Image (cartoon, rainbow, N blue to C red; front, side, top):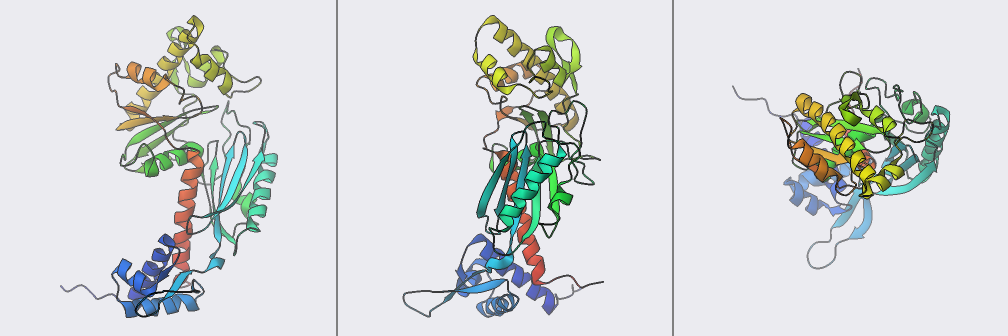
Length: 380
């Protein structure tokens, strides 16, 4: 049976998408250059450019080619197409930036927070940052991608306050906070999940579709990547390892987070790990430091054994403020290699991976949104 031929409207839609995505990958192109990059005929590209120009999605830059031959006009995306908001809510504060469809960052706003700031203060900081950035971009903020150093409910996008969580922002709802400023969807996920996506896309886990990302910082977190996708679970709480049972001092079984309480390595009046004290301790070579290092290596090994048993990863990536301390990964690797199911361990390599991962997703979502506006779906 001969398959049906695509309709003229479908062909126009596909051509327009090819033109838009070419201009998203390159700031300015002539129609001949777009034709060469897409393999679509010059007349078809010319028709598409005219449609997109009339729709306000593409503009003639006013620049012309030079040299021999026919003069060509350079085209680019229209500047008023707007931007995406990227935000990270961390124990140290809120970092927000606006990014356009070319991946260019238009300003960044940083607001310091206390670890116990609470949802109201965090919401005010996020709202103020979004308002400042909205005034710096042509067009509007069309969507937002938020990274949060707390568990995130998959269904609602609200932050989840679990027992002993070190960062007290309660059940902050970023979507509601950003509704007055952001005109489109707000995507929210845990910072460790965004970090894992970043390492998979452009870091140490490139080309590896099955791995576990272990974050060792003020908080303890884990992301599970399977078949190239971060697994979030029913509520979005996959990887919340703080209460996973592991070996503590003297081999006593206890929750992972309790190991640090027993070792006296929590911040005063908080369940957050005292990173400066821990880093200083790991740098020493005295008897106390060696004892603490041995306890931590055994505890981390227990967490990894559980993760490997459940997720069956090809490798484990370790990141976080103290997870990258010199010698720690080597010591954990040596210990873990003697377990029944060892896998290779490697260090995370990206700076601010949670923001990098969120930014990449924001650019992808913004580009897809712009493509959809060229041919909006018919109203039901």
